[in-house]
Amino acid sequence: MRKLLKPTLAFAAIVASAMWILSAPETLSDGAEFARLGDVEKGRDVFYAGGCASCHAAPKAEGDAKLVLTGGRKFPSAFGTFYAPNISPDSKFGIGNWTALDLANAMVKGVSPGGQHYYPAFPYTSYSRMELADIVDLHAFLNTLPSSNEINREHELPLPTRFRRALGLWKLLYLDNDVVSGDFSRGQYLVEGLGHCAECHTPRTILGGLKSASWMSGAPLSEGEGRVPNITPHADGLAHWSIDDLTEYLESGFTPDFDSASGVMVDVIENTSQLSDEDRLAIATYLKALTPIPKP
Ligand code: HEC
Ligand code: HEC
Image (cartoon, rainbow, N blue to C red; front, side, top):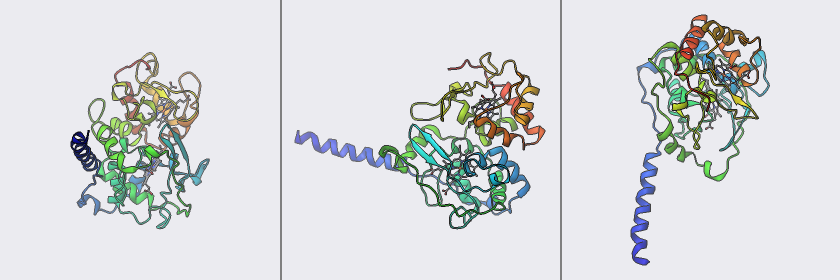
């Protein structure tokens, strides 16, 4: 037994150090793109396309109160309960001290200014496809919003998910900025990147990563009963919706069956209704060009 113990321990130590190295947070290097003054108007469009207020506004906030990004909204999941943080421009309680580079590291690398991994309850797995110029503009827009001195709530996590470092290994499996479907286009950027539509419409693996083979074919609702619908052009999904039906829905929430959007999709439409007609058309065109997949 003794004889075996030494090599076993040595092997375990090698594995542990390899894991430690592999899980290290990766960050962007500072570059000329971050020296530019962000464009507030463009940043506003990025903000609505990205749907930040849906998660970072106070729970139940309406109208202008949605622009106070105090955080506090609760996200129950199989991995524990997460709370959205304050991302208002308050320099103590929010992210007022952050540079555009800090914001870019959070959005595309899922890494905090202190070098810690974020949990994917923050959908950086989609935002990782964002263009850095858009992040610089978004940073400028966020700085024009009202401040809030709400204190961040701690996540409630069971032991196995409490260590952020382990997320480095999760990221090796599920974080990449490759596009999923079709050629690069505005619609693809809005759906797969900023709009993070797949985060709800695509089923997940046991470890919580998106199953790209079942892209947009529908998934269980993360909160409460029911399902998020299949939005591929399959008979189970949007086969009978025209491009016009889709742009109408993204603007007003009305469906071709004379129904209207409900649940969390209402928040999404609050954001897509703020986009330009061209952007809604780009989203609709992308969805209709997806591979039709039956619901899982
Ligand atoms: C689906 C909900 C959701 C959406 C949408 C979302 N976030 Fe978050 N965000 C979170 C959660 C949850 C966290 C906490 C992650 C953690 O603690 O690891 C977070 C963390 C952050 C942080 C880190 C804050 C800190 O104090 O370290 C920033 C910055 C941020 N989000 C910005 C944004 C921006 C900008 C957008 C829109 C483009 C956005 N988020 C959209 C849920 C969301
Ligand atoms: C927070 C989760 C969530 C996100 C993010 C999300 N959706 Fe949805 N979506 C839903 C749910 C839930 C429904 C069902 C709404 C209902 O029953 O009225 C839905 C419905 C839809 C429908 C109507 C389908 C039908 O058969 O009625 C379309 C189209 C759609 N979403 C497109 C999108 C697009 C495009 C995006 C990204 C810009 C997006 N969704 C982002 C949860 C989400």
